[in-house]
Length: 97
Image (cartoon, rainbow, N blue to C red; front, side, top):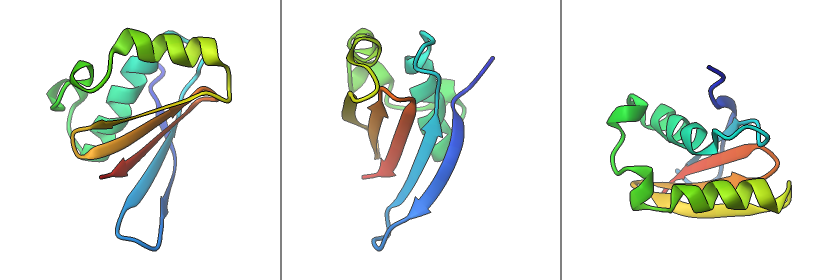
């Protein structure tokens, strides 16, 4: 299985840490990739992460937006203690909120 992989972690001037993961936008796994990326940042197993993704955003709508919007589209939402941005070019950016 090809999971979302950490691309880099950068630190801003604030105490918020930003994590960027890469995923393949051509694959139909963006929802799984988001859950795996957030779980990795939270240091928990993906199936153990709370809240569930569907509590923050409609997973089907997220997938449709990323697949139909091209590389310039981005979708942002809050998932638990994290601000998540998914970019159509293949990036998942996670910041602690």
